[in-house]
Image 1 (cartoon, helix red, strand yellow):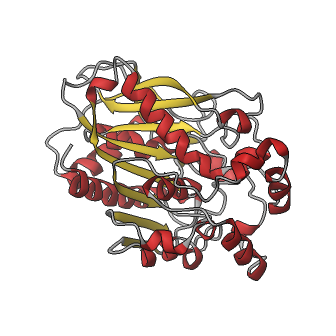
Image 2 (cartoon, one colour):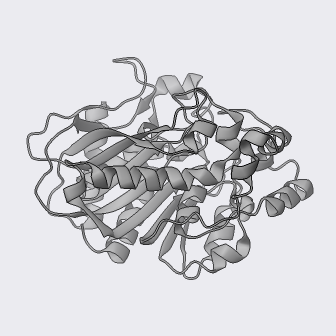
Length: 360
């Protein structure tokens, strides 16, 4: 199936699930936000954060492929968007902030973001400093994971100030979504709190659990991260780990394959009082559901949970090409086609956000 065909399948799925009359083309606008903590995490100590905004565009917008990999031989089928296209209309739209996984990128998860944009949402995503697939990874980028929530807040503020994007944002209707480590970002944005002592105790009791080991996207041990947090450069920011990192006005959260949940204070999850939905794979070897997504679903009052049989962790990234399934470590070993997994995630997210934030 061609990238265009895959995008059309996703559009059709979203339309039938959301009950929308039509799907718009997708526009894409690139921005740059600034955050002081980004300089601690970026390898070159820049304060800059890359921001990508996807939104419903005017009819006739010239969409281009977002696929990842060599032209004509992509590794990941992502979708399409029109750079700097005009908005579909002058209405203000509900906003969804999106956080990628450990060592991932906004574009890798654009299969999700672009379909939400087709359905009328403005999706604001970032590449988290020092922990993304584009830039050099850093130990602080991995260790200071609570600052990811401030990345989303900085991106939202930047989008609000943008003369093109800002007039189309209805920030009274604000959701957050995330995949893997990005799901923890979403929980922090909603009011969850970090508890590093809880995480340390968990890993002492479960040293073989995957979240306690170096992650393949950027291998660094928990000891290396702890030593980095104790340095004069990071100690002040490390002391803020358990602070309130929430973003004002978040009205719903959608979580895909949550990971590193044991780094959060369980009581802070129980205290969350907004609509939440969790989707995960029962066969996830990276973020075991009983220690991660299942914990979230049990803790948050009235949270929805969907567990997909035979689905693993990386089923939630953009669709792997045949070449990637043969050569890329993220794609090797996927037991099921990714289409149904993506379809289920879109269905759940669209239903959650339409119910909690109102129709787009």
